Every structure is written in structure tokens, then in C-alpha cells.
Length: 460
Image (cartoon, rainbow, N blue to C red):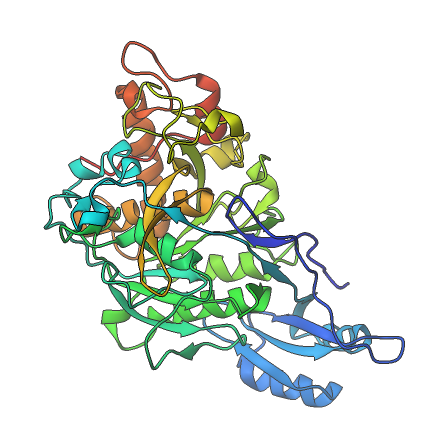
């Protein structure tokens, strides 16, 4: 029986554009659309099987994945897809689909940036990044863990970002970027700044200062990407840990995307979810995934990839002054955030949240409102944005720092996720100021912790 993922994937920004489901060129009464064919694990060489089946059905395989998930894609009618799926070497077939985003940046809120001085963003102060082993903000902090930003690309021309290289998965096949790595919309550059802006006494600084960032662009010039492009990205990230080059091993991958779906408890094999299957395989290969929870104000159990137990899901909280205690209610470029339902040191109104104990076990919170970071443009600069898209890279940066300085371990993503989540919970219990609202005399509301998870701490 053919499986079909229903729902949508969008960048985890507050202003997400509507999803456009996959479509194809009409041919008589049966249109042909791109399909993702997932093979059984013992099917043999994916490329050979794809060539065999494509020739048999009379279609052309346009992408083959072999590292994380044995799969291939081709444009087929439903009848052709059913014929392919009847082959015993095929596990399931799903229709490819695309997702879009709409995000933007506002001028920087960091004082001093415009005059050339470095700013320790308020979000970084709120998670104690300046007290981490990297001593974020002292002008010398550094992390050397390879991190992939699966997004719209990164503006390598930005002087505050250490972009080690990149690939373009916009066609469904990983194409190395030979020239300067660029960003199609600016979203990936904002994510990259929160994650790893340099600690160089200018601009802003990220959670893992100067860490090597690998751009994995899954979007086209229209701001859209396909499920197959995400599979390409996960496949490429996995390949870095299986080739002969030890210097390019990706340890952490940030995915600020979200869509409707669920964790079937069997790495997607029961539900027919190829993204879940690919992430499970990549995790087994040693890649740790951090995923934005999404911005629908709903239970993240219904959102992928955040729902997958194999990833660290990140919700967004509001912090406007870098301190616990809910001392202020406004101050985001002069806008009163109460007009949008926000209040200082609380769960962000738009953020998805967790309700089940299983999801809370792999969920953390980080600041996601009025977040200062790097921006793209004719003149790369700095600005602020909102969304779980910008909360996730703070956690990805903390994870990279934890791997660099301990106690996390390279190549042990499940151990690292448990270490990070448990450590944040213990920190929150011991020091109430690390929670959402309140200080040691005014504890944070239990409901915020139950729904959004403990606030990630950059480590002591």
C-alpha cells in the first residue's frame, strides 16, 4: 500500500508561508509527480536498484541516496509508482512535497554594534553563554566542532561567520559550492549567527563562537524546498562521517524547519516517513540533530522533525533583558510585545510545546523573541528576528560547545542529547533563575516547564 505524508513543512519562522503541495505536469487524466522511493535495507546497491526499476517502469531516476537512507526519486504517475512499489526490494513510496517560508530581519537591538563594538546579545546572556567554557563575549572564545546548517544557505561574505564550505541540495542531489557560499533569503544567515558568530570584539557573538559552519542549502530561488531536498541534506551530512576526511565530520546539524507528522516509534518505517528513517540512520552514524519545534502554538508531538525522539526539539521562550525575573514587559526596538501576547520570561505565544513525558525528555527551550543575530544583504549586517527557528541554533551551539569542552562526546548524539536535557533540568531545579519567570524567591510557573521544557544553559 502506498504511503502519503500529509501536512506541510515550513521554515520555523513566525511568518510562515502557506504550504504548496507537490504537483506535476498534467498528462491526460493522470499527472506525473516526483515520488520518493525508499528501498528495503537489504535491497542492495541503491544506484543499481534505482537504475533497474526506473528502466523497467520507463522513468528516469533524478537523485539517488545511499548514505543515510537507501532511496531514489523520479517523476512518475501513480500507476508507475504502484508498479515500482510492488517490487520486493521497495519498502514504500511517498509523493514528494515542498515547503516555503517568509522571514525577515529588523534593525539590530544590540547597543554598540553600529559603532563597531561587539555586543553580547541578551539571549546569550539569558542562557549564561558568557559563563560557558568558551567564555562567550570575552573576545577570545572559540569552538571547533563542525556544524551543518540545513537551511537557505549562509552568507559566507559575512565577516562574523566562519563558513567552512557548503553544498546545494536544491536539485535533490548534493552539489558542492565551488565559489562563495551564499544565502537565498537571509534566514540561514540569521540561524548561523545565533549558532556561531565569532567572538572577535565586533558585531554579535554566537553560542559556539567561530565554530566551522557548513551550509546545506535545501531551498530554491522561490524560497521553496522539497522533502527530497531534505533527504539529500541528511544523506550528505551522514556521508561526511563515512568518508576518509576526518576534518569535515559533521557532529551537529541544525534544522529550523517544521511540518505536520509524528514519531511512529519505528524510525518512520511503519508510518512511511523517509525523513525519520534518514535521521535515524544519520544519528547512528554520529550526527546530532537539533530541530525547531515550530510556530503554530500546538503540541510538537504532531510536528516533524521535532517529534522524533532522535532529535533535540527546541521551543521558544521570551526574554527581553537577558535576566530572569520578568523585570520588563517591553523593549524590543521600542515595541510593546504585550500587544502580541508576549511577556518577559515566559513561553513564547507562538511556540509549539510538549505535553507528553516522552517528548519532554528530548525538548529544551531557548530565547526566540527579539533575537539579535547576523543578517544578509548588500552589506551584511545585524538585526533581530523571532521564532523557534532562532531558538534552535542557540541549542545547537550549546551542543557544539558541550562536545568541544565536555561532557558531551563526539559521535555519541543520543548520549549528548540526554546529557544536555538532563543538565538543563538539573540546572533549572537547582537555580530557579534559569527557569522562565521568577528568581530564587519567585519560582517559574510549573506550567511553562511542563509545556516548553527547561531553559538550556550554556554550561558551567
